[in-house]
Image 1 (tube, rainbow, N blue to C red):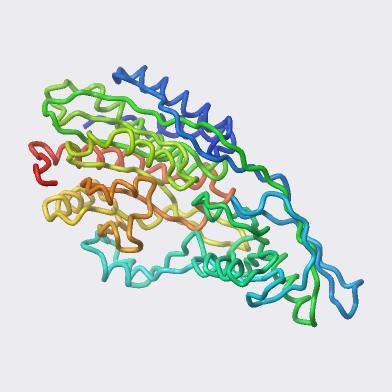
Image 2: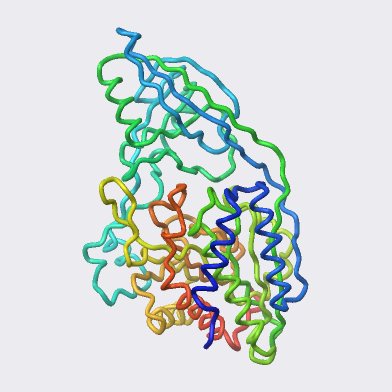
Length: 440
């Protein structure tokens, strides 16, 4: 099985990253979609298309917080901030600071990235591949704080005038936290503060009541992005969809330039395989608007619902990521992969196929998990295929830097690019002869 070399895939990743910030509706993201469509055509894929996806593009302009101690107005903390996506576009509010949701207050919520002991996930997984035995002691730092999202909702419900996510628990110094990405408009100004700025603010608040002015400016406007699709016919009338997303919170190498490269690698491999050796028709899909509530995936499903009944597998490939350690407050990539999650439909033959593939390709630190282990849907761009009852295998890693501008080229797990590509091919080959039941 000869797949594109890791060096070639890294060239693709570098090309994507070089375009710059690829948020939904940004010019850089559309350039990447056009470029990927060109490669699909160069590979010989048929019916290459760029179907439009309507969404709202969010463009932050700037945000600041200036707080003073009420008992001594000369005691000031003034910091730059990063506005939460799709919160109030333009505001300047002055109000008391509060650590709990209060009407009329600017609520300050202390935040820390979540942590997941891998032994807990191992116990809940369908199966796992851990030849090193690291899951006994390894703890994964997750890329968000779900409690912070609950705090934002509580602040809105209480009638607060603003929200400050104070990331004292961020392992490195950064305010670049692109969360939430559900594209829900929230009716108050809200910002993230970096770790050190958060500590300065909370130290001031510990001295007594404080008042602050929160200023934010952003733009939200309608935009049209594009999915990218291409087809290779196979020997059956059934379909396999191989996908990822092309947008990102930043220039983002792992999220999801690496996924784009994995889909491109699979497309190039299968384009060189004769039709009679392709077990099914293959549809390659790079979606727009993952960072806008998976707008591209939802649009694809809405436009292709008649096809779904013939899809024997929807394979999604996201995030070839290295695990990082914090050294003197700096993210330092290790040689180890971030734990890999393989969200897999609960079908014994499919679960066995995925597990056997992980072993064959030595994709260590992998879990095979049911699609709804964390949430009603898998935590992937392809999540909306799950309620449509499409059989799926979704690969994803969730490193702590996933939504941060620290997601740079040095974080890509280059050593895994070829094994992940071979794994995707093995899984497709393993569905040879499979059909969707007529009562799906």
